[in-house]
Amino acid sequence: MKTSTYSYLLILAMLLWAGGWSALKILTNDLSVDVIVFWRFFIMSLSFLPILYFLKIPLVLGKSNLKYVVGSSLLNIAFMFFSFVGIKHGFAGGGSVIITMLSPVMTFLLVALVFRKRLANIQYFGLAIGMFGGVIMLQLSDMSLFLNSSNIYFLLCALVWAGLTLLSQHSQKHIHPIHFSFLISVFASFVTFFYAFNSDLLSVFNQGAKFWVALIYLAVLGQSVATTIFFMASGKLGSEKTSSYMFLVPVFALFIAWLILDEPLQLHIVVGGAISMIAVFFINKKII
Image (cartoon, one colour):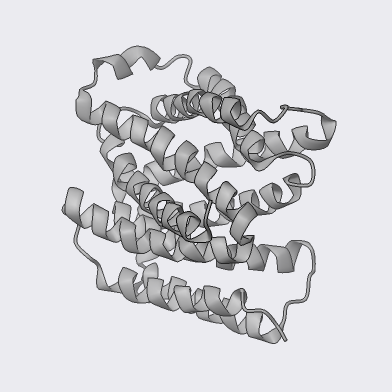
């Protein structure tokens, strides 16, 4: 497959990821978080089966990778819970910008604090810019973070995703990325099933076409397909170049939320997101 083809596929993947935020907003209007989260992981697990069959790579689960799968599954469940509640009370477009732009900043900050890793001066500069962008996005100047609960959950999402990024990075030494994503969804399905056991799990079958389109889109297109494309492209183009395409996600997400959900384009989200995008550039800049 040509390099240009992977570039087009990556743009498609970012578009699919972006649409997932609007799909999640639609789902928040119908059922409780525990029911939605279970069915999202369950359908996602099923959708990986044809991908695994196509890859034909032996699936191995041992002690060396089990801890990464379990830890990442729990973080993934937490991310889904926080994003669900945040989107329910906030804007899908705004949430996507805050989470996507602050996650890389949180990741580098977490590495510096937990592993006591000294960063380059230009990366510290990028972190400072990223925090400034976060202040604008979260409107901390007027203390609205403490009044707007959705921003708290979006901030927690960014922190959780940073932890998930670190675990997934280390897991690639022990397990194939596609297998990693599949096992996470399977384990998360079991955990959320027992959590939601006393809820009416079968209530999803009473929902209309709009609900099912949003749920299947979120689980299959927004996760399995987009993630598979991302991992395949990463192996061919390199992780640095592939990750740069993630800057398209908040742009697409804002437009889709405006088009489908009629959400307003909030100026502080656009400005803060742009500043954080510059921060990510400095954080990931190679030092000569």
